[in-house]
Image (cartoon, rainbow, N blue to C red; front, top):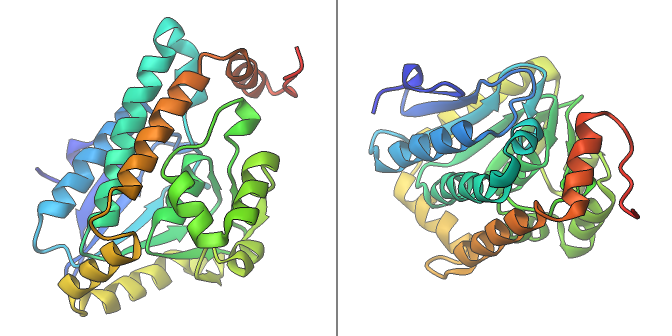
Length: 265
Protein backbone atom coordinates (compact mmCIF):
# COMPACT_ATOMS: atom_id res chain seq x y z
CA UNK A 1 0.00 0.00 0.00
CA UNK A 2 1.16 3.51 -0.74
CA UNK A 3 0.42 6.64 1.18
CA UNK A 4 -1.92 9.60 0.94
CA UNK A 5 -2.46 9.58 -2.82
CA UNK A 6 -4.25 6.23 -2.54
CA UNK A 7 -7.06 7.72 -0.46
CA UNK A 8 -9.89 10.17 -1.09
CA UNK A 9 -10.89 11.12 2.47
CA UNK A 10 -7.74 10.65 4.55
CA UNK A 11 -3.98 11.00 4.21
CA UNK A 12 -1.39 8.58 5.57
CA UNK A 13 2.25 9.55 5.46
CA UNK A 14 5.57 8.96 7.21
CA UNK A 15 7.47 11.87 8.72
CA UNK A 16 10.77 11.24 10.54
CA UNK A 17 12.10 8.70 12.99
CA UNK A 18 9.29 6.20 12.56
CA UNK A 19 6.52 8.72 13.26
CA UNK A 20 3.56 8.50 10.88
CA UNK A 21 0.56 10.79 10.51
CA UNK A 22 -3.03 9.84 9.77
CA UNK A 23 -5.01 12.90 8.71
CA UNK A 24 -8.75 13.25 8.15
CA UNK A 25 -9.22 15.27 4.96
CA UNK A 26 -12.95 15.44 4.26
CA UNK A 27 -13.92 19.09 4.69
CA UNK A 28 -15.75 20.92 6.02
CA UNK A 29 -16.74 18.60 8.89
CA UNK A 30 -14.52 15.56 8.29
CA UNK A 31 -17.76 13.58 8.59
CA UNK A 32 -17.53 9.79 8.61
CA UNK A 33 -18.77 8.37 5.31
CA UNK A 34 -18.71 4.77 4.11
CA UNK A 35 -15.67 5.63 2.02
CA UNK A 36 -13.82 7.19 4.95
CA UNK A 37 -14.59 4.23 7.22
CA UNK A 38 -13.30 1.84 4.55
CA UNK A 39 -10.15 3.90 4.02
CA UNK A 40 -9.50 4.15 7.76
CA UNK A 41 -9.64 0.36 8.01
CA UNK A 42 -7.24 0.06 5.07
CA UNK A 43 -4.83 2.60 6.55
CA UNK A 44 -4.81 1.09 10.02
CA UNK A 45 -4.31 -2.41 8.57
CA UNK A 46 -1.22 -1.05 6.84
CA UNK A 47 0.03 0.55 10.05
CA UNK A 48 -0.35 -2.66 12.05
CA UNK A 49 1.57 -4.61 9.43
CA UNK A 50 4.42 -2.07 9.08
CA UNK A 51 7.43 -2.68 11.36
CA UNK A 52 8.81 0.82 10.77
CA UNK A 53 5.80 2.54 12.38
CA UNK A 54 6.91 3.58 15.88
CA UNK A 55 4.33 6.27 16.72
CA UNK A 56 1.24 7.73 15.08
CA UNK A 57 -0.19 11.26 15.16
CA UNK A 58 -3.88 11.48 14.25
CA UNK A 59 -5.46 14.84 13.38
CA UNK A 60 -8.07 16.47 11.18
CA UNK A 61 -7.67 19.23 8.59
CA UNK A 62 -9.78 22.37 8.87
CA UNK A 63 -11.89 23.75 11.70
CA UNK A 64 -13.47 20.43 12.71
CA UNK A 65 -11.37 17.54 14.00
CA UNK A 66 -13.98 14.86 13.30
CA UNK A 67 -17.67 15.71 13.05
CA UNK A 68 -19.15 12.24 13.47
CA UNK A 69 -21.23 10.27 11.02
CA UNK A 70 -22.33 11.79 7.71
CA UNK A 71 -26.07 12.17 8.31
CA UNK A 72 -26.62 13.42 4.76
CA UNK A 73 -25.25 10.15 3.41
CA UNK A 74 -27.40 8.23 5.88
CA UNK A 75 -30.55 10.10 4.88
CA UNK A 76 -29.90 9.57 1.19
CA UNK A 77 -29.44 5.81 1.61
CA UNK A 78 -33.19 5.23 1.82
CA UNK A 79 -34.03 1.55 2.22
CA UNK A 80 -30.34 0.74 2.58
CA UNK A 81 -29.83 3.01 5.58
CA UNK A 82 -29.49 0.20 8.13
CA UNK A 83 -27.33 -1.97 5.88
CA UNK A 84 -25.06 0.93 4.92
CA UNK A 85 -24.71 2.04 8.53
CA UNK A 86 -23.86 -1.48 9.67
CA UNK A 87 -21.23 -1.85 6.95
CA UNK A 88 -19.74 1.57 7.76
CA UNK A 89 -19.67 0.82 11.47
CA UNK A 90 -17.94 -2.52 10.92
CA UNK A 91 -15.19 -0.79 8.92
CA UNK A 92 -14.84 2.03 11.45
CA UNK A 93 -14.70 -0.44 14.31
CA UNK A 94 -12.10 -2.42 12.41
CA UNK A 95 -9.94 0.70 12.24
CA UNK A 96 -10.41 1.44 15.93
CA UNK A 97 -9.59 -2.14 16.87
CA UNK A 98 -6.36 -1.95 14.89
CA UNK A 99 -5.40 1.30 16.62
CA UNK A 100 -6.05 -0.32 20.01
CA UNK A 101 -3.89 -3.32 19.05
CA UNK A 102 -1.17 -1.23 17.37
CA UNK A 103 2.18 -1.53 19.16
CA UNK A 104 3.01 2.07 18.28
CA UNK A 105 1.40 4.70 20.56
CA UNK A 106 -1.41 6.75 19.00
CA UNK A 107 -1.35 10.48 19.79
CA UNK A 108 -4.40 12.60 19.00
CA UNK A 109 -4.08 16.28 18.08
CA UNK A 110 -7.52 17.88 18.32
CA UNK A 111 -8.56 21.32 17.19
CA UNK A 112 -12.17 22.34 16.65
CA UNK A 113 -15.03 19.98 17.35
CA UNK A 114 -14.90 16.27 18.12
CA UNK A 115 -18.50 15.12 17.78
CA UNK A 116 -20.11 11.68 17.75
CA UNK A 117 -17.61 9.29 16.22
CA UNK A 118 -15.00 12.00 16.74
CA UNK A 119 -15.55 11.92 20.49
CA UNK A 120 -15.57 8.13 20.44
CA UNK A 121 -12.20 8.21 18.68
CA UNK A 122 -10.90 10.70 21.24
CA UNK A 123 -11.68 8.28 24.06
CA UNK A 124 -10.08 5.39 22.17
CA UNK A 125 -6.69 7.00 21.41
CA UNK A 126 -3.72 6.44 23.71
CA UNK A 127 -2.84 10.07 24.43
CA UNK A 128 -4.65 13.24 23.38
CA UNK A 129 -3.63 16.91 23.13
CA UNK A 130 -6.35 19.47 22.42
CA UNK A 131 -6.46 23.14 21.56
CA UNK A 132 -8.00 25.69 23.91
CA UNK A 133 -11.05 26.15 21.69
CA UNK A 134 -11.70 22.42 21.13
CA UNK A 135 -15.17 21.11 21.98
CA UNK A 136 -16.41 17.60 22.62
CA UNK A 137 -19.93 16.16 22.36
CA UNK A 138 -21.43 12.70 21.91
CA UNK A 139 -24.35 13.91 19.73
CA UNK A 140 -25.67 10.44 18.84
CA UNK A 141 -28.96 10.56 20.76
CA UNK A 142 -29.60 14.11 19.50
CA UNK A 143 -30.08 12.46 16.11
CA UNK A 144 -32.11 9.60 17.56
CA UNK A 145 -29.21 7.15 17.27
CA UNK A 146 -27.45 4.88 19.76
CA UNK A 147 -23.73 5.24 20.45
CA UNK A 148 -20.94 3.52 18.56
CA UNK A 149 -17.24 3.92 17.74
CA UNK A 150 -16.17 1.84 20.78
CA UNK A 151 -17.60 4.51 23.10
CA UNK A 152 -19.58 1.89 25.03
CA UNK A 153 -16.21 0.35 25.89
CA UNK A 154 -13.71 3.22 26.13
CA UNK A 155 -15.70 6.28 27.22
CA UNK A 156 -16.82 5.01 30.62
CA UNK A 157 -13.37 3.55 31.23
CA UNK A 158 -11.77 6.92 30.54
CA UNK A 159 -14.15 9.27 32.38
CA UNK A 160 -16.34 6.98 34.50
CA UNK A 161 -19.82 5.57 34.02
CA UNK A 162 -21.77 8.48 35.58
CA UNK A 163 -20.11 11.11 33.43
CA UNK A 164 -20.30 8.96 30.31
CA UNK A 165 -24.02 8.45 30.88
CA UNK A 166 -24.53 12.20 31.28
CA UNK A 167 -22.76 12.93 28.01
CA UNK A 168 -24.70 10.26 26.14
CA UNK A 169 -28.13 11.25 27.45
CA UNK A 170 -27.78 15.06 27.51
CA UNK A 171 -25.30 15.60 24.65
CA UNK A 172 -23.60 18.16 26.83
CA UNK A 173 -20.76 19.95 25.09
CA UNK A 174 -17.47 19.84 26.97
CA UNK A 175 -14.89 22.58 26.60
CA UNK A 176 -11.24 21.61 26.35
CA UNK A 177 -10.73 22.57 30.00
CA UNK A 178 -13.67 20.41 31.10
CA UNK A 179 -12.45 17.52 28.96
CA UNK A 180 -9.09 17.76 30.70
CA UNK A 181 -10.69 17.87 34.15
CA UNK A 182 -12.84 14.85 33.31
CA UNK A 183 -9.87 12.84 32.06
CA UNK A 184 -10.98 12.64 28.43
CA UNK A 185 -7.77 14.29 27.19
CA UNK A 186 -4.23 14.63 28.53
CA UNK A 187 -3.31 18.24 27.90
CA UNK A 188 -4.72 21.57 26.68
CA UNK A 189 -2.42 23.83 24.69
CA UNK A 190 -2.82 26.89 22.46
CA UNK A 191 -4.74 26.11 19.28
CA UNK A 192 -1.78 26.89 17.05
CA UNK A 193 0.54 24.64 19.10
CA UNK A 194 -1.53 21.45 19.23
CA UNK A 195 -0.07 19.70 16.22
CA UNK A 196 3.51 20.71 16.98
CA UNK A 197 3.24 19.51 20.59
CA UNK A 198 1.62 16.24 19.54
CA UNK A 199 4.40 15.68 17.03
CA UNK A 200 7.02 16.30 19.72
CA UNK A 201 5.35 13.78 22.00
CA UNK A 202 5.15 11.23 19.19
CA UNK A 203 8.83 11.72 18.39
CA UNK A 204 9.73 11.06 22.02
CA UNK A 205 7.56 7.94 22.13
CA UNK A 206 9.08 6.72 18.85
CA UNK A 207 12.41 6.42 20.66
CA UNK A 208 10.85 4.15 23.27
CA UNK A 209 10.33 0.37 23.50
CA UNK A 210 7.64 -0.14 20.87
CA UNK A 211 6.86 -3.78 21.69
CA UNK A 212 6.65 -3.06 25.42
CA UNK A 213 4.28 -0.18 24.64
CA UNK A 214 2.12 -2.50 22.56
CA UNK A 215 1.98 -5.18 25.23
CA UNK A 216 1.08 -2.58 27.86
CA UNK A 217 -1.66 -1.09 25.65
CA UNK A 218 -3.27 -4.48 25.13
CA UNK A 219 -3.13 -5.28 28.83
CA UNK A 220 -4.84 -1.97 29.61
CA UNK A 221 -7.71 -2.84 27.25
CA UNK A 222 -8.06 -6.38 28.62
CA UNK A 223 -5.26 -7.98 26.63
CA UNK A 224 -6.48 -11.00 24.71
CA UNK A 225 -10.02 -10.90 26.06
CA UNK A 226 -12.93 -10.36 23.70
CA UNK A 227 -14.46 -7.48 25.69
CA UNK A 228 -13.65 -4.79 23.10
CA UNK A 229 -14.69 -6.92 20.15
CA UNK A 230 -17.95 -7.88 21.84
CA UNK A 231 -18.71 -4.23 22.60
CA UNK A 232 -18.14 -3.25 18.97
CA UNK A 233 -20.40 -6.03 17.70
CA UNK A 234 -23.20 -4.90 20.03
CA UNK A 235 -22.75 -1.28 18.94
CA UNK A 236 -22.84 -2.09 15.23
CA UNK A 237 -26.06 -4.07 15.58
CA UNK A 238 -27.72 -1.48 17.83
CA UNK A 239 -27.03 1.62 15.74
CA UNK A 240 -28.01 -0.06 12.46
CA UNK A 241 -31.31 -1.23 13.96
CA UNK A 242 -31.95 2.14 15.64
CA UNK A 243 -31.47 3.88 12.28
CA UNK A 244 -34.76 2.31 11.15
CA UNK A 245 -36.72 3.68 14.12
CA UNK A 246 -38.90 6.79 13.73
CA UNK A 247 -36.72 8.49 16.35
CA UNK A 248 -33.66 8.28 14.11
CA UNK A 249 -35.62 9.28 11.01
CA UNK A 250 -36.90 12.35 12.88
CA UNK A 251 -33.53 13.14 14.48
CA UNK A 252 -31.59 12.98 11.25
CA UNK A 253 -34.19 15.03 9.37
CA UNK A 254 -34.17 17.64 12.13
CA UNK A 255 -30.38 17.87 12.03
CA UNK A 256 -30.31 18.25 8.26
CA UNK A 257 -33.03 20.91 8.34
CA UNK A 258 -31.53 22.73 11.32
CA UNK A 259 -34.58 22.40 13.54
CA UNK A 260 -35.26 20.97 16.97
CA UNK A 261 -36.32 17.30 16.76
CA UNK A 262 -39.72 16.20 18.07
CA UNK A 263 -39.22 12.76 19.58
CA UNK A 264 -42.70 12.66 21.15
CA UNK A 265 -44.55 12.28 17.88
